[in-house]
Length: 130
Image 1 (tube, rainbow, N blue to C red):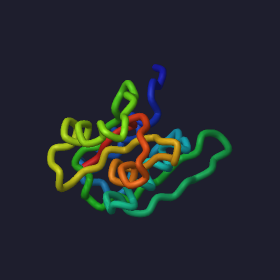
Image 2 (cartoon, one colour):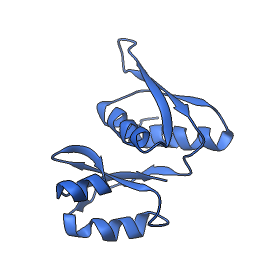
Image 3 (cartoon, rainbow, N blue to C red):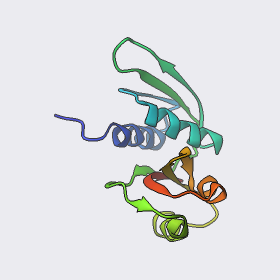
């Protein structure tokens, strides 16, 4: 079977491992987008440390879970989100205003919706987590 989205598989593995109560999960294959998405999750305290293992093929990532992720998914297709529309997207995707983050890919890199609003840039909606 062909993998349609490596990022979707990675986020599904994280969610499944959290529900199963595992303390760590191995994600393979790995890409720069996955690493940057994990860095955003780590900045906000949803996951612990993660290690990138280079096996001279497609890299692997071992993520330490801390039990805080309830759901993380991609948004497919990747819709364009203007700066003015970020609030509408947050309201439609996240369950509450107090927690959760929408991840966007912008000209400034892969950032969450709060940082995109600060930088005043729009982009494409990659996914969300809470």
